[in-house]
Length: 117
Image (cartoon, rainbow, N blue to C red; front, top):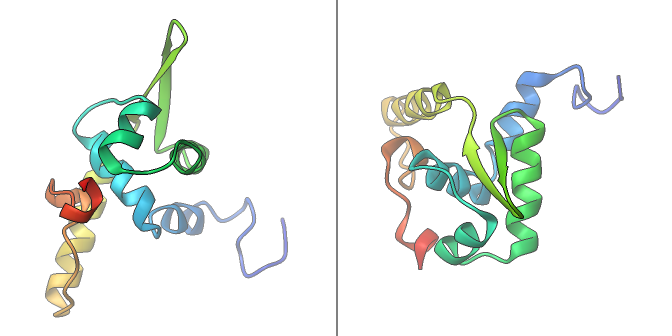
């Protein structure tokens, strides 16, 4: 285990929440909640560079939240754990209960307008 405040491989909970703590990854999760997508689909729909999408998909795959299936030379990415959306809805409920305001999240089924434009 690596020193660094529990950020090593022995801290899967921390890794999960760090992976969800990035707005770009949340945008990707929101899109994948609607169905599988290729990297080219994600870059076009979210207005992100291919390298950015690939980097964030690798992180989400590393946490076991996303996987892909190959079809010919194309890879189709999808969420592996539908209960992830329950977790994000619960986070929205906690934010609402504490009076915090947050931008629409993947759990609400809405992608912020800036995420698509």
